Image (cartoon, rainbow, N blue to C red):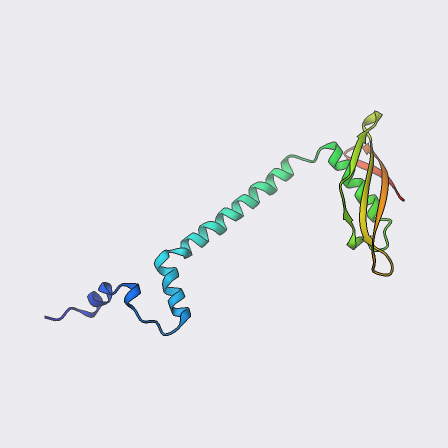
Length: 139
């Protein structure tokens, strides 16, 4: 007595099948391991983590020191010949009376000939309402 074809196919294990190409073998392996579901879960987890981080960034604003450093970086960028090439190093911020900061730092930037130079900078940042006023001097 012969089995119906659907029952014969159910008895064949994936490793018993001879595949015509490597891509067919890969597709069968993905199906056998259930990696499609895993991929969807990993992508969903990444989106969730990204969303949580972005919400946290918006809910907890920068410290006053960080905001002062960022305003000084913006003041420095406005003075550069090639502002898109600016890469800032570590900056030190010294708190001043009245809530302001005196900030010193370095910026690597391309000069007019395309060479990379390092400029030192000093900046004074003062809080004005909800924002910062910064005056930077490149040395």
